[in-house]
Image (tube, rainbow, N blue to C red; front, side, top):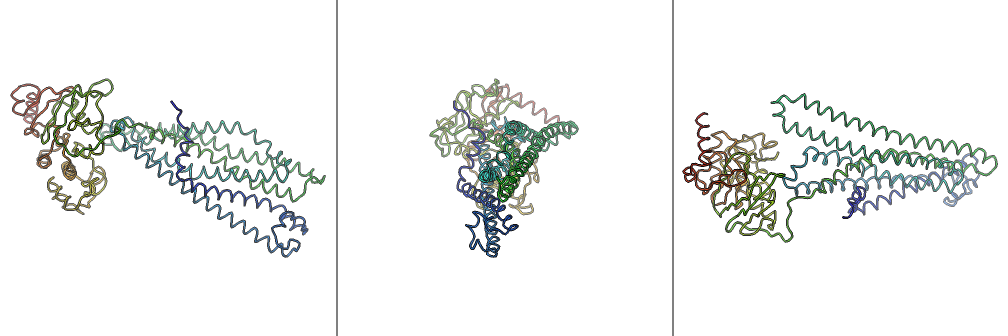
Length: 595
């Protein structure tokens, strides 16, 4: 098996589509480095000329100036030359900043979209293996770290590395002996700085994982606040959050210590180099082996080299943190969806005959939740699944829409294995009304017509059929009223009726009702049940029911226990058998009597 590409190579691969902007940015960096070197090169001859007045001090600079022998002419043209270099440098800085900034933003947009696309490909079972808060932190803290790395650290590395390289070259051109003295100590720092870099990357990855844990705890707190408060777990959760926060702070302390050493270390090396240069230069100038204008240019180059060298030390931590975050993002992108379209998968158009479960087995770990199940749903038929909780009813419904695939056996749609059916067309052919309705923090209109192009008249008709039009029109804004996060502005019955209206508008041939009335009071149940009866007209329906009163008129009722169908028939037939269905019926009647 081939080795997985390194994180850096993969991150650079994300940048590849934006190669034109990168090339423009790098070209601007080349101009920036050249103009910085030009400043250093001009400094020595210019200062020496201004102090001595001797035109020969200008050396090669004279070739760039009209009338180099005339002091007045030189004093006129020199400022224009310096101003021209300044304009070129400013334009180059803006160009590289804008182009590389746009590259960073575009790359982050690509990564964000890739993350979302991968999550949309994962089945509920796949997502159930991931901690939601940690998953969401990839969109937040991790993408932010990658953006910082690409927007600040990477351009700084490229820009300042070029400036350092050009200024180093200028130093060696001016005097190789001074250069050897000034930079002779730099290689000594390579080994400890390399080790520090590896340590920083390791600490950065641990830190991002800790941020993910904190995000997970925050997500669990918001999602489970009712349970937390009901069980008095606030102090326990606060302690757990505090422990993780202290772990994160310890990692940040280690990171800051390492990053804090890099910049002063580079500055100390530079100061030592400058001191050694000055010590050598004093003797060399006395012997006439070194010209004062060369020394001035060399010192100017050293001074201009100091800041980019310090920058390289500073941004190392940001870049390594960005790589650690990119690695976490790639971990999600590398997740393989368990449910995919098979090669040559074909779409379906409605249900012509029947859906069949043939010897279907599905396991959670070693436990068979559905065990060698045989079940048939004929076109236009209403089939109800009843039984004790944990018997496998909801899993059967999930297998129908390919939330997961059977471990054994198969499910066919008009004789075609569901694994050979295009996922998109399968799921558009099945409308689901769950017990826990999912509504988005948007308008009534957007929630009812979710993913569907529908006119206002069609939405009104669906709401009317779902017994929801009156309460919707009574809301401030009507169809444009906000339902709140998870439909917080609505009652349970109202949320269910909006879900039914959504299913009506989808107009799918097959309907799955997963305990759609079990959490409602009696009055809401009557309203929702009436809406469900409208919804089921002319459709093939698989109904998972807790209350047997809601499925008395089903064409067939299947009693499910331990993943198998143990009884099957109509309501009266099953009561007459005196078996599992009869016991369920008597238990519920006793509960109603006790209530």
